[in-house]
Structures are given as C-alpha cells and as structure tokens.
Length: 328
Image (cartoon, rainbow, N blue to C red; front, top):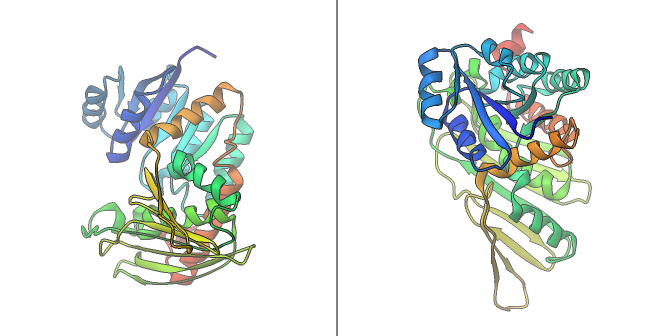
C-alpha cells in the first residue's frame, strides 16, 4: 500500500463537509476525490476543500483509480447501494450512521465486505471519543460502584416537512439520525440489551417525531432514552451507580467534560478531556486498513448488526416502516 491513503467522499452535505475537515488533520491521508449527483455540487465541494477530482456521479467516484477509501455521507436510504457499489469497485468504506435501514441490509453490506476483502465500518464517532473510553474504564474499575442506570437524550427541533429528517423515502425520523446516540451510549457502557420497550408519536408522513423507552442489559441495569424532532432537550447523559453518579456535559456524543458526584458529600470531581471531533474515527479506519484488517476492533460488525436489530425492534413497536421495506 502507498504511504498515503487516498479518500473519496460520497455526498456533499453537512456531515460530508465535517468529515472532509477532519480528514485534513490526519497524517498520511489525502482526499483525492468527491462524488455527487451533480457536477456543480461536486466542484463547489472540491473547491472548498482543495480536492483534485470532482465527479458529477457516484459511479465515477467508485471508478476513480486514485481512491482507496470511500466515506459514504448520504441519507440513510442510500447507504446500502452506495456501500455495495463502492465495495464491488474494490474500495474500503466508512459508512455514516445509521449504517442501513435495517439489519437485513446491514448483513448484506457486511457480507459484501467479507467477499471483496475490503474494510467496512459504521461511522459511529461516539465510540471513538477519548472521554467515553476513560469513563468506561473507570466505571469498570468501580468508580461509582455497580451501575444501575444510564440515561441520555437527543432532541432538536427539525421542523422542515420537506427535509430529509421528516421524509419516509429518505428513512427519516428521529431514531435513526438522533436516537442512535442515546442507544449507543447505553450499549457502549453496558453491552447489548436483553429487552427494549419503546413508545412514541409519528408524523402524518409516518416517521417518528418522538421516541422514548427503556432497555435492560444482562447485569439488570437499564438505559432510558428519548429522541425527538419537535423540541430541544438538554443533550446530556447520566450514569447512576450504587456509589455515585456521573453527569456527562452536552453534547454527550462528543463530550469534553464529565463530573462524578458521590453520596458521601465530598466535593464533586470534574474531569476535562479534549477531543478532535470526527478525526478520531477516520484515523482509526486508516490505522486498521494499514494493518490489513477489514473490520474495526471497536465499532465491530457485530455491534453494528446488534444496533440495527435494536432499532428494527423499536421501529416495529412504534409502527415505522419505510417505503422500500413495504415494496421489498
């Protein structure tokens, strides 16, 4: 493999811009191409990030011989076909969360990565935050005793009825885009749940505008979660144990501060840990590809499948079905 790992970006939206900015901070990485549905969008993105190749179709991006890795930053509805096409073209892939519409699609994508022997990972950046790794270690070493609950929320007002968040054809709804974060934090700290109960409210178009519920884990601890497109929550997370509690400051999905309070009345302990936003995630991808791996040892394929199965069950309880699932 060449000294420089060459990245292509599929999509030109907000998250793709953030990823391009993050990639520019990583040693041994170069963004060589961007693909979009239109040439104008690709050229504008390329100019903003000094990218040499701008492709007015995704097919041209897959075919670009100067691209080793593709970042898929499109709406959820496009993740499956774009990932499969990139893998079949011989590219490694980092695919934005939520990885797919459902677990069946996720299995198909992972099977393709195995078949083509190419790296594939879901872009769940919270799992790479230094603070969360330190917290998990401290909790595992008994910092707050036995954990009995994790609670997290992610609600922001996204009111445009024509935007992707509220469109069923683009796999809209709060759960896949926002609710995935409180679910993931509970899973990161406590492992996969053994049961989930969810309630919510759907829009007239049939996507979830509000969802909340509780998961129970093997230890007996519970995770409570809430997500919505209709209002603003405090964007914090809390972990309660038998010997103390932890408050993770907003935004908890890429946090820089947490506070431990113990019941003995002592002074709370506040810890600050900086992060490099999205950069930790593609840096990990780059390291794993250079090591010859096709799977992450942090955001594993089994973790991605488990997460999709969990969200499938929550959507089943809420009654959210996407158009492509009805026709399929």
